Amino acid sequence: MPEGRRSTVAALAQSASPLLKFKEGKAVLHEQGLDLIRSIPGRIYPVILMGDGRAGKSYLASRILGLEEAFVSSDSAEPVTEGIDAIVCPMSKLLAETPGVEPNTATAPQGEGDELEIEEPMHMLILDCEGGNNAMADIRTLVNVFGSVIGTEVIFVCNASFSESALQSLSATLAARELIILDEGSKLPEQKLIFVVNKNMLKYDENTLENTLRSEQKDPGRRDARQVVLTSFSQRRFISIDVMGKPNFENQVDALRAGVIQDRRPLTMGGHCVGAGALCALLEHIVNEMQSMNEVTFTSMKRKVILDGFLTPLVARLFSDAENSIPEVEDYDPNLDDRDCRAATLQKFDTLAARVSEVALLSEARADLQEKLDSVWFKVQRLNAAFGAQTKETKTEHKEILGAARRVPVGGRGLLKDVELLHQAFRTEVRTVIINKNGSEEKSDWEDAGTRGQKIIETAFQSLSSAVPALRGTLLKRSPSIVKTVMTLGVGEFQTRRCIVKEGHFIWWDTQRVKKESDAVSGSINFLINRAVVVEDEENPNLFSIKPALHSGWDDASCFSGGTNRELTFSCEGSERNREQWVNAIRRNIAFADLAFEQLGRGRVKREVGVEVPLLAQALWTPSTV
Image (cartoon, rainbow, N blue to C red):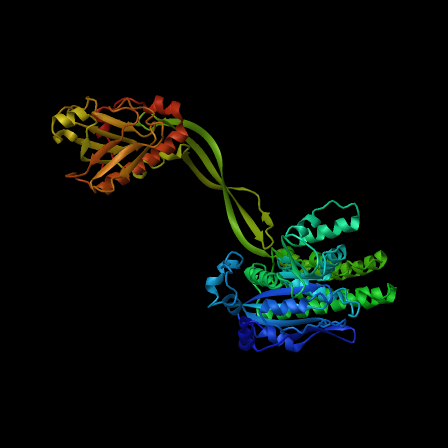
């Protein structure tokens, strides 16, 4: 025995444990094997060896573990393995004894890769299955089905040569696993296939399996067999191993071992690793369900057996489960229909009874189940409807009845004096609404509430003087003239200007030049016609800029110099107001102007507000100047 395998034997000091055996013709999970699985900490990597009897599966299973006699093997005609035997081995030991195996983190769900093996150890659970074609062995479909369901890595071993019968055997095994019924929400784990020709006397290359699977076949049976294998395994590999003693034998076995270890990944269902306890529960569930189905499958299709022995008990069990899941209604439940289990129960019946070919018996049993389910559910619905008719709340609704409308100018001497607002007269009607628990409503007739009033349709102008602030003070305005800035050695970069923001406008003027109320101000931005934003300088706490909000620039730049893309920059240094006060007032004026533009439209803004430079009298007139 090679020294590496001898050290592994000393470390593990264990032999195969029986997991699945047969007693009086029925499958039994052996407690020794279940205890072995229950002892596994962390993640589990199940590797299944199945295929021809007397093909050397037990020997190869031992060699994958690095053990010569972990699984008993023999060259006699008698079957060595009955049912399924199992051994557990830490992946850390196998990795340490297998040079050249690369880290493999991609296949572990939720980031559980090799770097987590100290916290979340992974163990290989290797399962050696009874041969499926040994004439000396009892043929038990459950062995192969059992192995197929839980195997992350499936190693199918055939003897001496790659044959059509071996491919058909693998296909039959995969078709048989459809008999397994998993719990709702579960699914079979994704599997990889290694197809091994052991004791090989012929010459094959690594593409033999793929070429065979994808070859054209006229025979429907052969074509279907290949399709089953292709759809069952997204990843497939072919390995041939020579007869023991041949020059390449040890290298070929080592390659198989390294490949299995390289493929390591935990058994998962629903995206989560299946732990030891959950795996034992899954195995017990599979065996119990297979036992039940086999009793129906291998008995005669007589009425007493099918209906009384299987379908009627099945209906009773499903109805009992459904009855227990039906909610007890103590108050109105608006989502009661979401908890209706009838369709799911009938679907479960269809699934569990799908193998029964007696259509009349199936229809009779299904109708009985439907009647029982409807009877219970209709009682719950009637009770829920009674609760739903109860009053939940009472509320009063109001509505406005519109009367005459007339246009009234804003008036005054400000910038918006010529804007004509639509004043709408209205009166209010009222009614009582009773809302039931089921959402239905009972409404009284509308009655006059005696309320009369008027409202402004252009809501932007509602409470104009209080909602749109006016702020006046002295600011430093940056000159747009580069020449002036250079000629004055930077002294002329900022100019002192008197400024005011009000009525959706920002206005500034030079007090040395603009003195009379009839004088036009130096410049202004009409926010009603120009979409704008105000931005604080990130470095200077006194600076802020007013910029076009659109990439196209200002809509009308006729009231200031610098063009349609100019950004106007101001400094609050020495001002009576700080930057926060200015920026807040400007933003509120911009918000008012945007809404006013939306409600008035471009044409009315130009006609009733205008785009001309305001006079000083208009700038100074405001009852709300702060």
